[in-house]
Image (tube, rainbow, N blue to C red; front, top):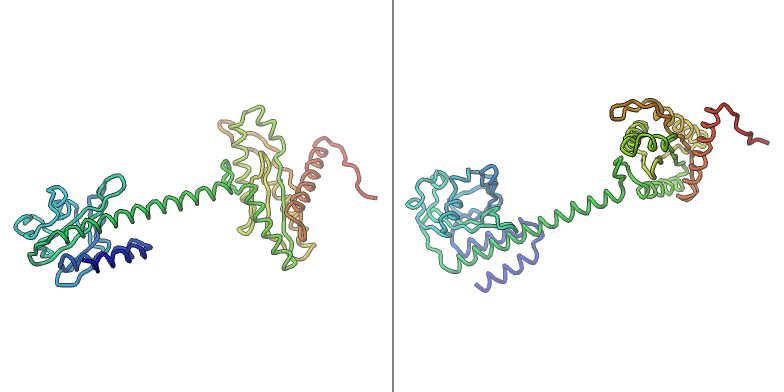
Length: 344
């Protein structure tokens, strides 16, 4: 027994998965029970099915992994309902079990594996083709092993919940909740990465800022719900003009930003910036379907620059300057005035 306990201690300490824990336990369970087949099952009560998940077979009795049987016909269900942990004359006690008859089981031992809420989620079992009495040591091992497996399953469940929670928090710390686009923090990270790469290979980075024209008036007249619909639809239109290698983000109330790789040739990079700004303004202008109405919307003023050898903040400031220059030009165009000359 001492050797078994030492082996058990080492097994539990090293196990980093359910299988890594269960397989040595099944081997030890075979030793202490003397039964030729030991296995771990899972129980799907919703679909009334029991499945063999991990098994060890050393004799004539073969209980394969992946085997599924109706829960209503299982020996485990009978053990639980009748309070029997060990039955050494299965054919006499449970002669109505087709599964036991097909496999030729005569001795059967089972302990439940329970979740944190007490629900039975599986069983730890040992079975043999001949009649065999099991003493206190074997029964104790069966109970201890089933509890260790239950604790490991619960630990894995908690770790998986923690992983999902961390993924959720990481995603939402970098995502705008309204549009599901990346947020300002995500954009800064991506822009920093692109600028660092551009500094290494001599290419440019397209950096754009898009500000919605007339958005305040829509919010004031129709309310924030309609305003949110405008933002969402505008985000969808802008997303339609970006490449897989680009990032479109919402960085403020009515402000979007864009970053993406550009050619190493300065003229080509500036041409790409001009083209992107024009496409952004064109695709966002027009009629928006909002609730029960269709509203004309001016779209965005777009400032896009080709940047390199600058910091993240400097690149965004350059785009911001270009965007406000475009906004002034749009206003002056609508009012019929000519913008002042900036030439010499």
